[in-house]
Length: 115
Image: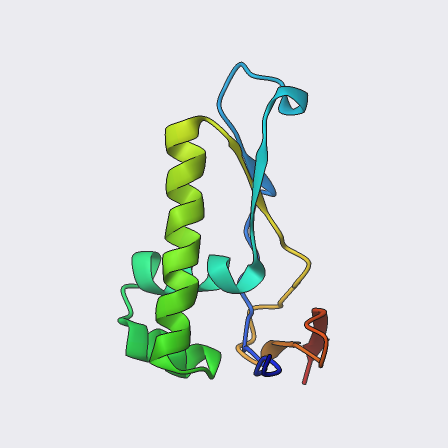
């Protein structure tokens, strides 16, 4: 498997979980959204960028954005339609400066780094 490229991520969600009201967390299955999935959803659905623009912003190809977007939308749809909890993996704590990024070293582990 190819090593992942660095992704320029800065967005930090204000919440860590979304879940159905009235059901305790211990009774729910969690679906996790990764930081790059959260960023792509924000760039395309909130900021109104197309996939090419989102790719430029994150420093990856349009095809990569398309793959991340499809994965994120599938997870969100599953959580909503099946009444599951959606956990936002927010281990990337960007500052909003536009220079923050996530490094993906060989082996696929994620480390937050800022320039």
